[in-house]
Length: 117
Length: 117
Image (cartoon, each protein chain N blue to C red):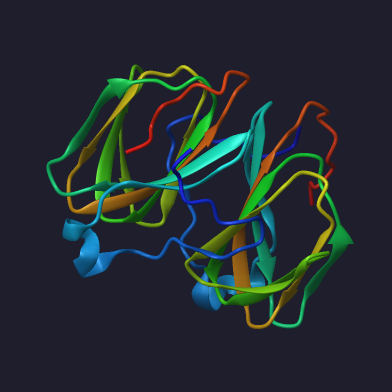
């Protein structure tokens, strides 16, 4: 448990990183027994290879543009747009421009994902 | 079940409403068995009286400024900031300026909340 843990009701900054994006890396913002929230930082051209997580998740594009690919097709997500995925849906992400995403993952039963970085 | 239901992987607009805020009302963006996501629209001076929900929730300020009050104190939330609350935490919200919030609620076990509007 080496994650920073803001307490409940403490403001967490999810503003666009802008010029700082290139020097930033993906960060776990907080994690409880039920939910884990990360900021995913994807410089242009970077991809997240296909994988899945157990629980449902939402992906909100905070800046830039990404392409989200699932078995059902490919979807562009612009800054200010979000989508949700059911648990165990295989997906991949490709950054079409410098992008950061707010990722909210429901920790469905098993507390398994090892996404620390 | 009269809610609009975008499918998984369909982009949902969560950009600031800006000048349209005064003519907008709070909207359920989507709901699954596990999670419900709303945009809460609070014109300046509007309040959400103290209440609680069963599951954990996150509140993300999309525009404006609000004050979130819990038993532990009062916290201002500006555009681009979020916070989380554990389930069953009594809270109230007051809009210090025209504001809209993205509210993500975990539907903990009981599928009960009747927040339709």
